[in-house]
Amino acid sequence: MLKRFRFNTEMLSSKTLAKIEAYVQAQIGRADIPGASLAIVQGDRVLLAKGFGTTEKGDSKPVTPDTLFQIGSLTKSFTAIAILQLRDRGLIDLDASVQRYLPWFRVADKQASTRITVRHLLNHTSGIPTTADRIIWQTPKTIQPSLEEGVRALRTVKLHSPPDVSWQYANMGYNTLGLIVEVVSGQPYPEYIERHILKPLGMGHSTFDLQTAAWLG
Image 1 (cartoon, rainbow, N blue to C red):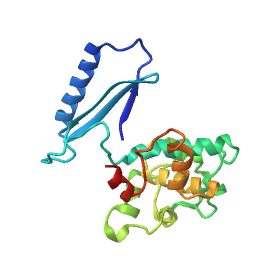
Image 2 (cartoon, one colour):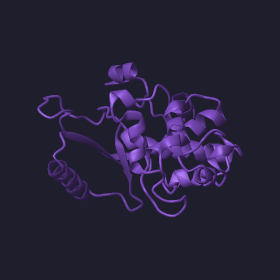
Image 3 (tube, one colour):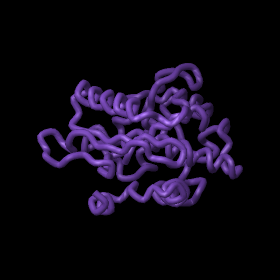
């Protein structure tokens, strides 16, 4: 997937685009990553679409503007959009307890569990620690067979602080939001995202399916 950068200025000159291109190339080298793709969009015009480097270290396959990448934590943006879409439909209250939507939800602290809200999960202020994601994917032995079972495993996790006290990046907070999307919408998370976000945006080269990704790639 291409990263898209929008500029609310006058049309960028070829000289400016060349500087941006050189900057991206330098950052790729500094970060010691094999390659990346970049698109610069202004209004409805694509000003620059270019690939840099290769798909793997030591790989001769060059990155192009159409090369597929694992989206990783950018998935959180789509999860947040889904939550806000459901909020706009009156189906989710951001300041409601997570237990309104997942009655069984809890962490090790039973009382704190009742105070964690949807907004806390969105803002990474729930108290769920960064290390909580180890309960679902740290080793083959701890991988949970489903999203729900992964979220249920939070019942053993101790918070790093009470809810709404401090910020700490938490993948498991967003996994919990993904499950809320499923429960409230009545659709599996991948289906909801594809139907309500990817397709309306015309993102035909984005997919959850590995076989489809292999075909697109």
